[in-house]
Image (tube, rainbow, N blue to C red; front, side, top):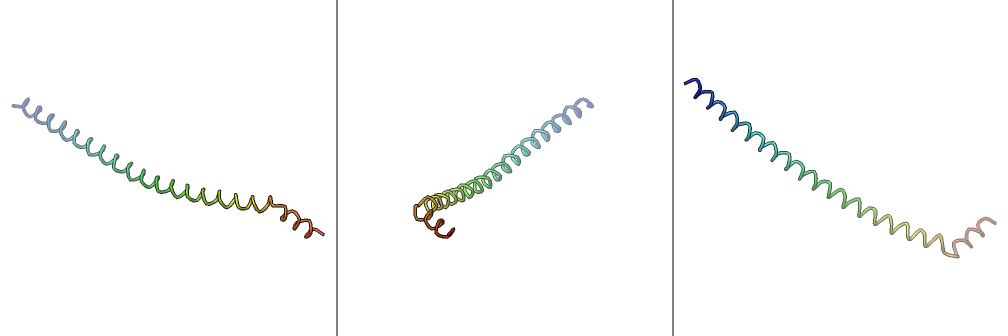
Length: 78
């Protein structure tokens, strides 16, 4: 009789432990997927910002390398 209770207790503990472990795995997976989607949004935002900055730098490089710009600087220096 005592042995039957021990086996029953062992089966219940194993079942609860396994269920808790699977629930924890599911929780971690859902948490990681939520973080991944936030990271993707942040990465896309940074990529867009980087692209806009590259375009602005290219425009500034064109302005500075124009011959008229150098001439204006020399005239202003006089």
